[in-house]
Length: 207
Image (cartoon, rainbow, N blue to C red; front, side, top):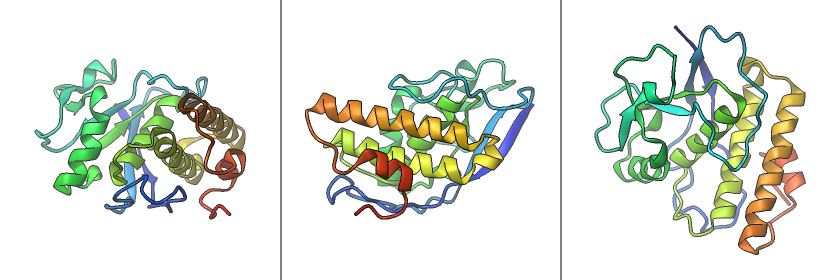
């Protein structure tokens, strides 16, 4: 048995420079079906987002989708009671971002998100932002920054439905600020604006 929640994930404004994305909001985002095992009384909040891909993050296909790399969903959602459902291969997030855009396939018509932990949910929201906002990925730190901002905004918007409080959301905010700082430092480039202010205030326009 799975617990299912419809998350509100409306389209959000782009605040990074022109050119980072070549098709911002090419497909209007609206809702995302999120599932986790019903036996879990609450989402596991022991781990916040890090630079590592989280275990237990899976985009399950509820419609035929032969144009994307697929694997059995139960291999990535162990013990969830899944059968022969297929899922987007974990290595194929970029493929999905490109193919959804090129084929004009609405992500919600193909996928639902499985995530039983906070880190998996945040990264799932981050990937969902990628699916709706295409970019050439020529500037990875800035591209990831924008998708992190959207993911955090969606987390805040749905925190009651998810079952998390302000303290948990603020911990995620701090984790995402640190991650973004690491990305820009690794690229030898300064952030485009004050990260603390951006993650605290988005989607309010950044001066």
